[in-house]
Amino acid sequence: MQEARGCADFADATDLSSARAALLGAVQGPAELLPVSSSAHLSLIPWLRGWGWQAADPEARKSFEVALHAGTAAALVIGQRRMIAAELSRFDARRASLVALSFVPPAIAGYALERQIERRLGGPRSIAAGLVAGALAMVAADARPQERGPGDAGAADGLALGFAQATALVPGVSRNGATLTAARLRRFTREHANLLSRTVALPVIVGATALKGRRLRRRGVSPTLRRAMAAGVASSFVSTLASQRLISLVERDRALWPYAAYRIALAAVVAVRMSR
Image (cartoon, rainbow, N blue to C red; front, side, top):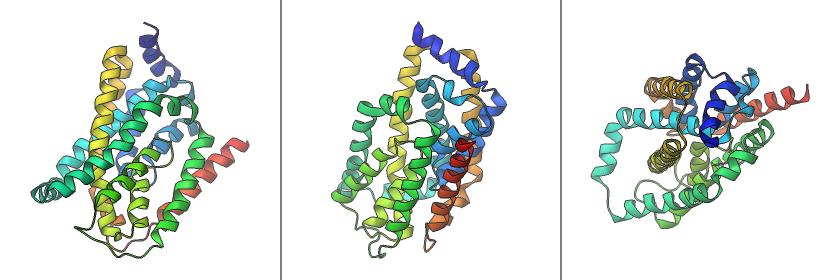
């Protein structure tokens, strides 16, 4: 009963109307497709606008975020259906082991550490630190040579991508940014690093959505939160479909430093706001 009240408190504490949830969903689409950390934006926008986000129940806050990711995942399945079909047509034991190994580290870390991370690392200071750390790692990784391409990914690469996804549990790190960093560190071309990032992300997003959905059913969801989630999911679905061309911005020969610069600028905005 106490946990169910926590969900109701989420909507009251943050004043998360359907319009505000839809705004966050509109940001979720492009922020997820670019390596700038959608989780950072979903936390910092309410904080910067004074919505009282930090006063909300951490579990419900994370559940809302995962719901937006579910909308993004559904849009990616539709928008990238040709790429997904092409990858499935080439699916073999090597690719299966790559995806499986990339799933294990974030699944273990999420099950064991997610609640502690939600309670301790969701504040603006830790998010800004994650943005800066991720930016520096991206720049360093993107200086590596582009030597590997399709067919070169193996078990060790799957584990590297999996550990990268596990670090993305920390707000501000970015799943897309972390997996791109890991792939570039292992000398994959920028185009193939982007493909690997999208390939291994979908199973983790689906798994996180299923876990949060089970917890929400057990806890109960207030009508206000349910309406906010519906508006946010619909908005994230539409914004992701509308932002499909952003994927090409981090493919081929496009460097990662512009996204690193944006992340550092966003962290600077947080630092200035906190100093007031």
